[in-house]
Image 1 (cartoon, rainbow, N blue to C red):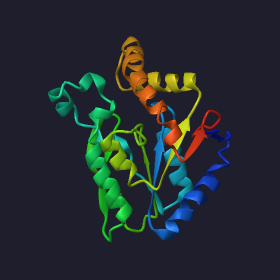
Image 2 (cartoon, rainbow, N blue to C red; image 1 turned 120 degrees about the horizontal axis):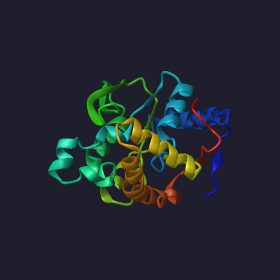
Image 3 (cartoon, rainbow, N blue to C red; image 1 turned 45 degrees about the vertical axis):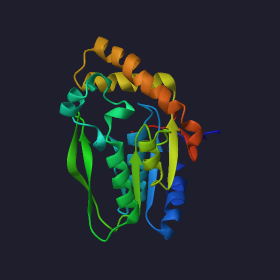
Amino acid sequence: MDPLRISADGAELDRLVADAEGGASSGRVVLGIAGEPGAGKSSFAAALVARGGSSWTAVPMDGFHLADVELRRQALLDRKGAPETFDAWGYAVLLARLGARPDHVVYAPGFERDLEQPLAGAIAIPPTVDVVVTEGNYLLLDRPEWEACREHLSEVWFVETDPLLRLDRLLDRHIASGKAPDAARAWVDRVDGTNAALVRATRSRADRVLDLTSWSAT
């Protein structure tokens, strides 16, 4: 699938917002943004929500990270960020609730970057929201728990960027979270690299592919 290249000024975002809103006439849109670690999913989702205005909101998949205490119990802490380190079934239930658009506020978990931990009840989604943007690595993964998530997404857009830029972002992110540079590089190679290969293989399942190489949120 040939990607739509998003220009440096992001002029294409208004058309993408209008396309997503077109589906809201028949109910709430739950739009998924997938892509490899460091591809720019969070920044792109935030930019879409900013363009969409008060009827849009973002709900990240990262809120369904298992807490470190549970990852230690399962001996998964050294693979944090892999598909099995998320509560994907719980995420699927939330997506179903959001798509049903109940007449009350739905609360979703967020993710606290400073703590590197999920935060329960951090995001309120009122019934007035027309478009929910949710972003995460594994929205197109062909495993039962992730396919259950995909069932409740109106569309999934796959974002990609220059590989070297993506790796630089990952290194900066891990160093900012407290890892030493050597440890950050090792994590990017051992954990993020494995996860990125899984995600890359799901690209063909996306409804759209967007190239963010020229675009920046700043």
